[in-house]
Length: 447
Image 1 (cartoon, rainbow, N blue to C red):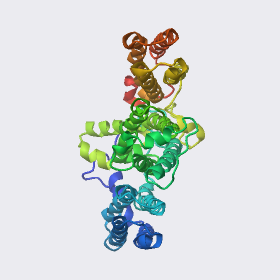
Image 2 (cartoon, helix red, strand yellow; image 1 turned 180 degrees about the horizontal axis):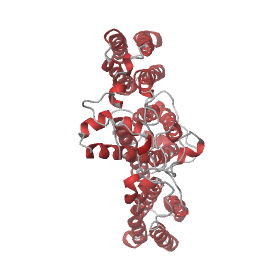
Image 3 (cartoon, rainbow, N blue to C red; image 1 turned 90 degrees about the vertical axis):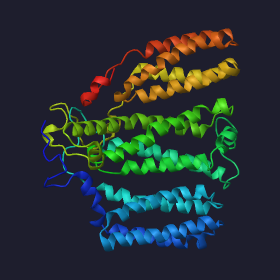
Image 4 (tube, rainbow, N blue to C red; image 1 turned 180 degrees about the vertical axis):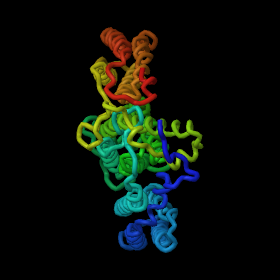
C-alpha cells in the first residue's frame, strides 16, 4: 500500500507528533486561563480554611508553578512548559488524598482545579484537527470517532461521581454512605481492612483514575489511533489491565469482607463495558505501530510521532461505514449474541446462588468468585476484536461442575444447579457467532 511521507527524516511536512508538540505555542491564549487558575490556587488555602499546613503549602507552590510555566510558554515559546502543567494538574488530583484533606472544600477545590488545569494545558491542546483518513486499513469503521468515545466518557463520569462520593465518607466529610441493596455493605467495605490497607483513600484513588479516563476520552481528534499512539496506549493501560484489577478487587469483596457494595458493583460493571468499548482502538493503534515498524521506522519514533494515512489506503472499498457521528456509531465493534447474554445471566445466577440455596464456606466463595469472573469475561468478549476471551468461560464452567463434588457441603438442589449451569457455560462459549465488522489482519485472531 502507498504510504507517502511516512518517515520523519527528510520529509517536507511535519508528522502528527511534531504538530501536536508545537501546538501550545500557537494557542497561547489558553495559558492565560492556566495563569488565572494558578492565582486562584495560591489564595485558596486562606479563603477556604484548609486546616492542613502541608496541603496549603502544596497549593501555594503548585499555583506559583502554574503561573511560571504558563508564562514561560508565552514568553519563550516552550511547549514543554505547557505540558508540564498537566503533571501539576495530576498532582492536584492526588494532593488531597496524600495529605488527607481535612475539609471537603479543600478536596473539591483541588479536584476541580486539577481537572481544569489538565483540560487547558493538555486536552484542548490535543484537540487540533489532523489531516488524512480516519478508518484503519482493512477496517470497516473508525474506532476513534466522537460517537465511539461518548459512552466511555459517560461511564468514566459515572465512576468518578460514585468513587468521589465514597471517598467523601472515607475522608470523613460525611457520616454515612448509601447502599440501596446490601444495607450497610458499602460502609463495611469502605471501613474494612482491605480498604485500610491502602495508604490513601482507595475510593479517592479510583476517582482520580476515572477522572483521567474521562479526560483522556476527549484527547485528540477522530484520527488519534494513528496520530497519538502514546496516548491510546496509556488510555488502554488505564482502562484494560488496571481497570480489570479494580474489577478483581470488587469481586473479591464477599470473600474478603463478607458482603457486596452496590456502588462498587455498578462502577465495576461500567468498567467492564469500558474495557469492551476501548479494545478496538487499542488494536487499531497496535496495527499502526506494526505497519510503521515494517516500513523501517523505529518503534520509539512511531510510538511518539504516529503516522499518516491517505484516503486510498483507508478502510475497505465499498464496505466502510460512514464516519459521521451518530448514536449507532457508539457501539460499532461491539456485538452481543444471544449466547453471551445467556452466559452473563448464568454468571449473575452463580453470584446469587449461595443466598438462594444457603450454601456457605468455600463453596459459597467459589460461586461468588466464579460467577463474577464469568460476567467479567463475557462482557469483555462482547468486543468483537476480543471475542476469543469467551474461551476463558470454558474452564470456569468445568470448575463450576466439579466444585460441589470437590468442596462438599452442597445441598442437592445447589449441586444439580451447578452441574447444569457449568455444562451450559461450556457449551455456550464454543461458538464465535457473527462478527459484523472487519479489523484488518486482526481478523485472524478473532476465533
